[in-house]
Structure formats: C-alpha cells, structure tokens
Image 1 (tube, rainbow, N blue to C red):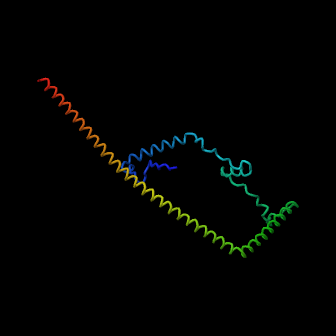
Image 2: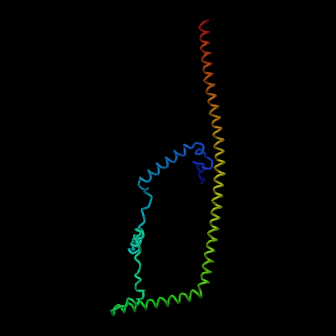
Image 3: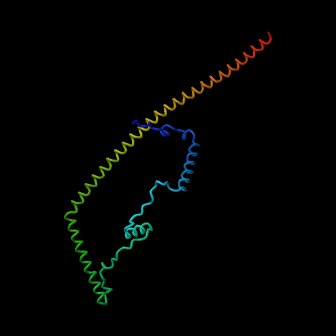
Length: 214
C-alpha cells in the first residue's frame, strides 16, 4: 500500500511574511489569544480522561496528600522521650523517675547504635562512597552521551527540515512565477480577443453599410 504524500501547510524555514509585513504578527497574536480564551472557556474534549484520584484505597496516604496540597506543617513525632532530664528539673514522683529512666535508656541505646554506625562507616564508608561516586560518574557520562546524541539528532532533523522546506519553497516560488506569467498571457490574449472582436464588428458594420449603398 502506497504511503500518502506528506502535506505541508506551513514552511517556517521559508515563509517570511511576518518579517515582511509586521502587521500580520499582531493579527496572528490576536487570533491566537482569542482562540486560547475560547478553549479555556469551553468544556474539555470528551476523549480527555477524567482526573485520577490518588490513594483512594489508602486513607492515610490520601490524608497526607491533602496535607501537602494545603501546605500544612507535618506533625512530627514527639522527641521529648529522647531528652534527658536536667538536674534543675528533677522528678518528684515515681512516675516522673520512671519516665526519666526510660529517657536515659533511650539515649543510651541511641548512642550505642550511633557508635556502631560510626564504626561501620569508618570501616566501609570510604569504599562505599567511592563506589557510589563511580556509579554517579557513569550515570553522568551516559546522560551526557544521550544528550549529545539527542542534540545531534535534533540538529540533523532541523537541517533536513530546512533543506526540504527551502527546496519546496523554491519550487513554490517558481510555480507562482510561472502561474503569474500564464495569467498575464491569458489576460493579454483576452485583450487581443476583445480587440479582434471589436475589429470584426467594425468590419461587419462597414460591410453592411457598403452592401446597403450599392
């Protein structure tokens, strides 16, 4: 099956009407503004899907999403249980001493875990960081390579479009000039026909007058 010929209704690399006639740019901008306003006022196209509701089956995530959309502050966890009681505020009840003791246990466990993490970081952190940097550098190189390929493809595509549109534009100019010449020739032929018809009418009238005088 033959592919349909491409239809070019605009040649932006060739058409320069906006530069030649600046008034056209204002008219185009005005028409675009009018059409944009119409589109904004009209309802969405029936094929446009409805908005997607996120986390319908998860009320916790749904509530968190609404909080973020409303720009409300996050209600963080209570950190008072991780704070040690100072000597100036010693508890006076058994419940207060138990709370202070629990806080001391939490602080002690936190420091123990922190000490273990620092020891692991000192032993394995440098190698892990080097490996992480290696992967980051590899990702950067791949992204830069992909970017250069896309830039090259874009440049080649624009170059092909410009060459193609310039060639088509020259053909249009040649055809338009030929069309103008043909129209001019047709007008000249029509004027010549009118002149000949007038001459024929004059000769017929003259012939009639001569035939009547004989």
